[in-house]
Image 1: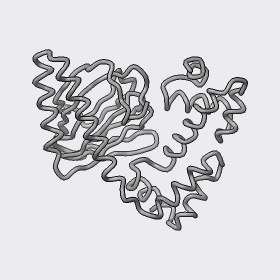
Image 2: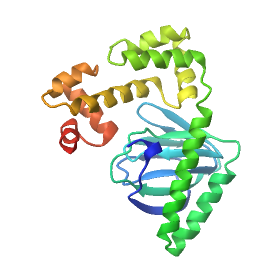
Image 3: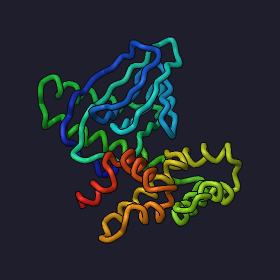
Image 4: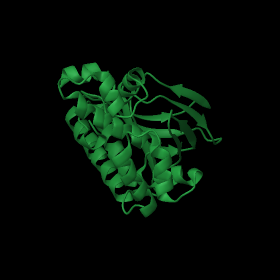
Length: 250
């Protein structure tokens, strides 16, 4: 399930959170988090990405994604967020978007906080879908128009993601230096090049897993993974379940 097709199973809480530590790790979370950063600044470091969250930064933190937090300011960070679960894992990686004005997002969360305190589950559910729709609208707006060089690289990745030198060749296609390329691609599509390629591999793997008779080793090779063990590890990290379980569910 992608973020834009999100379906909520249970709203756990609506909360304003004021950090009391300067550094901490977040892993083995029981729920997804969507919200807005109200004050302070903190760097969130993931396995394949890094976010700097400041005032008016909206964010989605996927349950599957572990991260390390370092506070960058004397002011301890404060955030306002929904915590929720879904019936199936969300494939979209954690993301954040810096806004100049998050008044509309905060207004939705304030209404949700009131509904949460009164136990109004119907209103909370309506408001979280409203919030997610607003996030999708914002993401789509800032993703277009894209830098032509990033589009060229993305188009190459779409065709050659199974190849070992896909990233290197995509950088060459973009005619951008390697150090600048990562920022260029991320600014255009709000995902790192490595994460994008991994996502393409996983989506292709899902298609192949639906075909009877294909062995996992063959699917691993067809998707460009070095071996079936690494394929299974990455697939579970991205989807929350093993390739074998995915095949059984389908």
